[in-house]
Length: 157
Image (cartoon, rainbow, N blue to C red; front, side, top):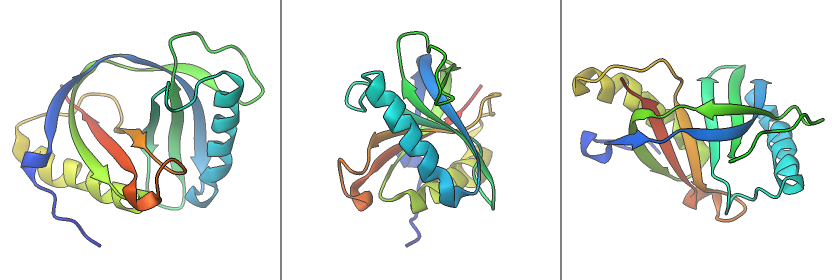
């Protein structure tokens, strides 16, 4: 189902720096679930459940046969060396355009495309040198996939 996004659904926010524990995924999007399960296990071992630690995805390349994401959990501490491949990174502070997506992951690409291809050219804004990222506000298994809530952030100068 194609949605009709509008400029009045986009907010400009000042995002505060977020220190994150990140697991990089490069590969076929069909197999990202393996990386998600690794991050979930790391989170369990480090007592960082989603209710206490925000969940982010940094999108370096998100379409085609190969994607490149960082799957992240917010943390206020250093990330110790581990067998999962999780490392410490930072989502920098700065202005962002943000739009909320409610529904399954299949619609997130459409939201991202709207921000980049339709909203940005008419907004008078310019991109900052950081990739688009998502904050997973509510997601399965906490809620059904069609009730998932994801905030999509487009970093701006």
